[in-house]
Image 1 (tube, rainbow, N blue to C red):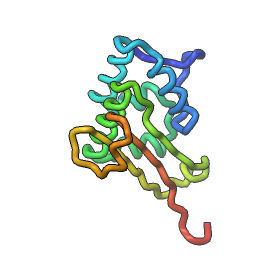
Image 2 (cartoon, helix red, strand yellow; image 1 turned 30 degrees about the vertical axis):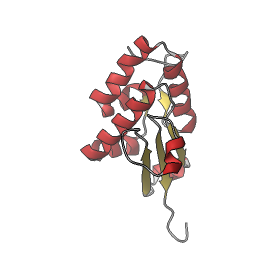
Image 3 (cartoon, rainbow, N blue to C red; image 1 turned 60 degrees about the vertical axis):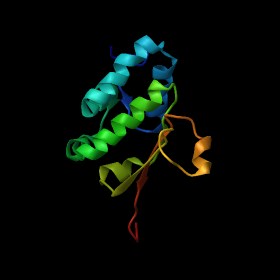
Length: 141
């Protein structure tokens, strides 16, 4: 199953596009959500291409992303959606950041009830996953 927006077009990979996709995915009945979750798990790069209109720099980044990062992203997203939770996604950038391929940090946070975590993290629901994409600006920019 390929979930599209009402105009049958892909979303931009930005805050609004990710929020829109998650809203659509999480309002589906579980039986319809499951094939999407499985596609995230089985082929993260293919999932990104299927659901998002990606810039050349984003495609290049996906193609050079480590297997460990792809695995961590796919598991975190799948676990959240499987538990009916939106991924806490934050990406603050301008088109200039992406066109210039400005260096960025990807910060992931994941909570799983089976791990021993500090008391503060026990307030988070099982399946909670956070992705922050932060662009680094060099001095003088």
